[in-house]
Length: 131
Image (cartoon, rainbow, N blue to C red; front, side, top):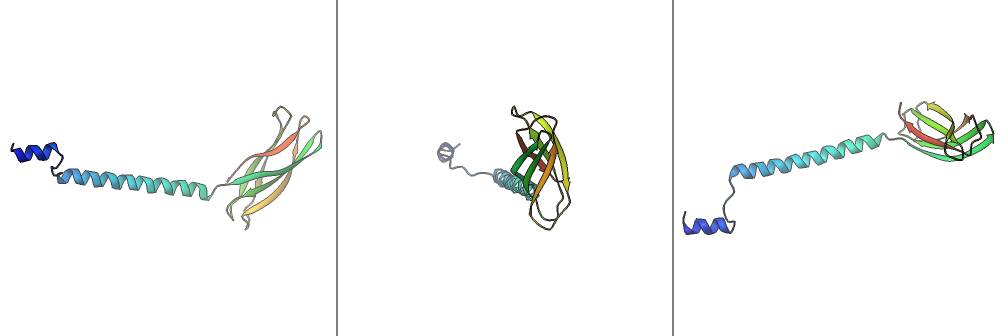
């Protein structure tokens, strides 16, 4: 090995071979493809997401609770929701599954009645999904 080769190696002035450069570019391309794929799956999963919010409840009597809610879902998509009535210790004393057909609007308001087995202190939307 000559003095020039030893100095080049010592100070990092050696040339990278084509195979190293190829694998570097291929690795960066794979990472970029993975990032784009992850972004696409994240967007497609949230584009059909269902959002539900409890807008109010009323304790009608010891056997009935009404729950008002706002459901936001892409237009033309049916939706199903679980409604709950709870007692003061957050125990479930009544629940109901409701299904709504597809509609032309993005957000819709509903009011439902839940039968309960004991005195309730609150009513809420537990969750909604696309059936």
